[in-house]
Image (tube, rainbow, N blue to C red; front, side):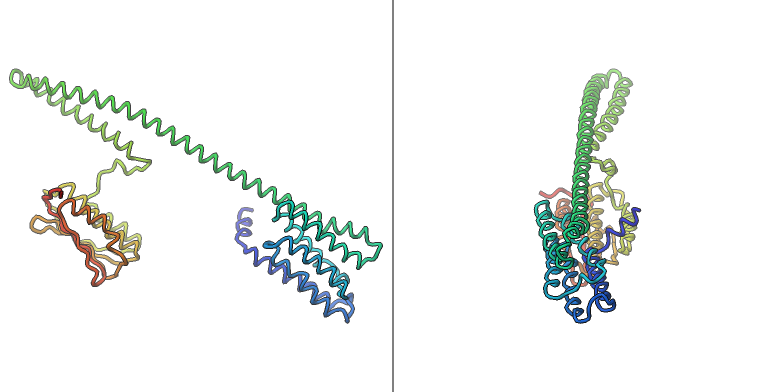
Length: 386
């Protein structure tokens, strides 16, 4: 059932109305030209009237009231000028009117829908009376009830049901939003409580460290063993305090991100970065010299960020191949990301990285003569630029 509903929801409604219009016109034309109920002299006029009668079906979703009144009026007018749609079986004609009455009830507000129903039924009564004669009052009432009132009422029920469905969905979304807000508030409150508790623990540990360090200073000459034990206690307490401090900072910065407590990346994680970008469609080749022992964490992080920014910019711009080179020359870390494919506005993408490189006393160059090449140089003994 869900599969059927999903398929029906994907149907183009305007195209469906056009097909219904063509089908009803074809049914009426076959009756007019092949059946013997319509007199031969009246067939051309009746055939034209059939097309004009069914045509409003194609626009019933856009102009429901006009379509209903227009088709009903056409029936009466063609009867007055010699048309004989009343001589057909009436199945196609009744089906078209049912669809039009339903459309007026389902897609218009109550006032306009009521006016369309009354005007359409009144005009249609003229057609029935003209075809049935003065004795057709009962026929008018029957047809008005079956063809107009019943489908119009069903349309109103459908409109009300759809309105309630939309309202219930809005209420459900509002309830979900309020529940999520309550959950976020509860999480924030719990984090605040945990932060206060850890803050007290850290303060107690720091106080104990200060007291033990002071005692060790006084005993360092008179009782070195006790001073040594107290220094070891300071070291252990400091580690515990540092661990608690990292937990507090990680909790405050996490925002539901599990990577917040992960260590900062470095150049040793470039192979994993290259592999992840290969899965995104950018074939990267990586060439790295062996890293020196005195590479500081800050330079290591900046080097990684430079290459990451260049590669992700290339991947986002549809670059399919790139080469990454990491080398160490005369106390400098040299980085290069190059590709034979050009990237529009690549300089705008790398402005933030240029500032980061300059902060460590390095330089960043961009070459776009053939494809693009990003080259960075970072002194391994960097000083912070003023």
